Length: 119
Image (cartoon, rainbow, N blue to C red; front, side):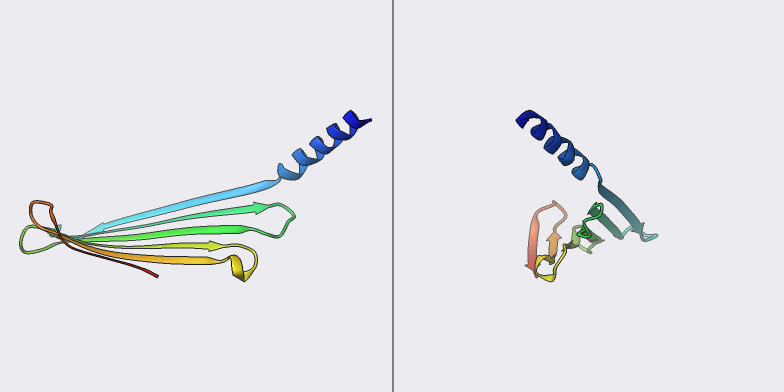
């Protein structure tokens, strides 16, 4: 009798978790100016995990924008903005983080200035 009960519980668990659906999408865009002094890369990833019939889907979104500019001294400046967002059922489980960084490099690739802020 115990074995029959264990088998029934195992089969129910397999059926209950088999309906989970995960959807992933990704986009990436790159633009460069005609003179080649400025390049912008924008990317976005979105993952949605939706257990069927449970009404508690979770969405994770990651966005990154990178902008690179050549300066007059032969080096370059890089600005990066990253946004991570987690949307879960209920407001207390939602999270959003934004990180911005600015890096200036000289012609040899050495870092001259670096600033990072997180919000």
